[in-house]
Image (cartoon, rainbow, N blue to C red):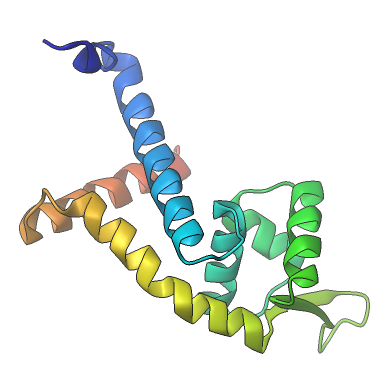
Length: 152
């Protein structure tokens, strides 16, 4: 057994450690892709753009929940992305007190540029798996997520 595999030797911690390491490597690889594209974004900012591109305009609190940020952190990220011209805060159609966050044309353009980066990173992560194994992994992770969200 090499020293790397010793890090996973504790059965109760191994799943959490492994998932954390996989996420950290995806973040590292994605940030390297962003840098290679000369896009000045951090992974969290990329996730915000991705959510808005895929799900459309939403409130800051909905967006914060979807990328797992607290309100203060989300406000800072939104300020930075708005300053870069990638998103804007618009009045909500039904609730004048609320704001909706939406991508600008520049935000849409940078998302289109980054879609391939995202696919490259995720495909590289799954390269050692055949199609059936990729489907199994996806199924397993969905079931683990479901179990964690539905504790009773």
